[in-house]
Image 1 (spheres, one colour):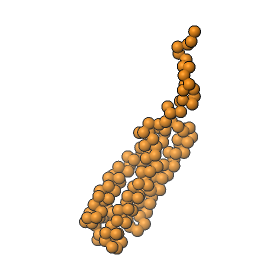
Image 2 (cartoon, one colour):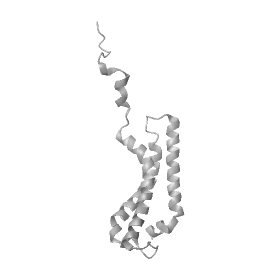
Image 3 (tube, helix red, strand yellow):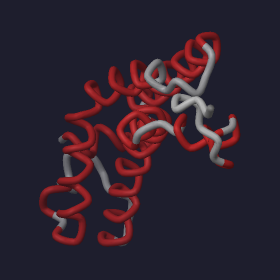
Image 4 (cartoon, rainbow, N blue to C red):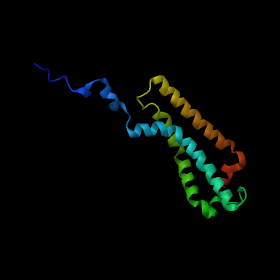
Amino acid sequence: MQNPYVSTSVDSGPEADVGRYLPNPVVLGLSWGGWLYPVLVLVSLYGTWLLAWVALGSIPVPMRDDPKGISMITLPYIMTNVLLMVAPVGCIAGVLGQFLYHGRTMMFRFLHAGGVALLWFGSFSLVGWDPGRVVEWFFD
């Protein structure tokens, strides 16, 4: 007599369980988003500045070349503002999102969370250091 609770199918072995352990898209997005978001903020900020440089024909000067007054960069300016406003939430979600991905051991989760925290610290430090007075120009 055959046991009804044991599958005799070919695809019932351990190899068949490979697809079950893939993370859902939200967890995967939080995990990767934690690494990509601080870079995206910096690229957006300095990309807006470079577009303003192209539009003006010279390096934008704080307190003289207002980013809101340059029509070519209206959309990048708004997108950068939104990214900067959501950055604190993105920082916390990015660090905590590293703990949701169950494909890693706990040690790797802490290492990834520490790496994301260092990346955010580095990007905030670069914005605070403000080489070229880009942030000063952006917020004048």
